[in-house]
Length: 119
Ligand code: FES
Image (cartoon, rainbow, N blue to C red; front, side, top):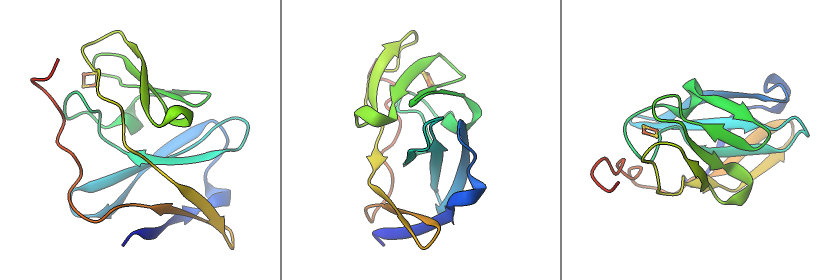
């Protein structure tokens, strides 16, 4: 990779998010804030194996459905509320819109494994 074409920008509605399988074992979350900013991140909670695309997007923050950790896509994936045990920041990728498509700078290699035992 690393710059990878993900999805047509127009297909991502403001205030929505969806998962896109970039390659085997690497689902990427594409989210668009209500203000129209596009973000791309690992579609896997850093706490355990729960897809964040099944959670709730509020502004730039994604809440994991499983234990309610909240990650801020606009703050490099920082955990802003660990209502559950999630404490590890989410990997957020740089994005660009090129000719109507969302591109993300996704490093080669496998995604980090959720830190189930790290608290
Ligand atoms: S799996 Fe997401 S907070 Fe636990």
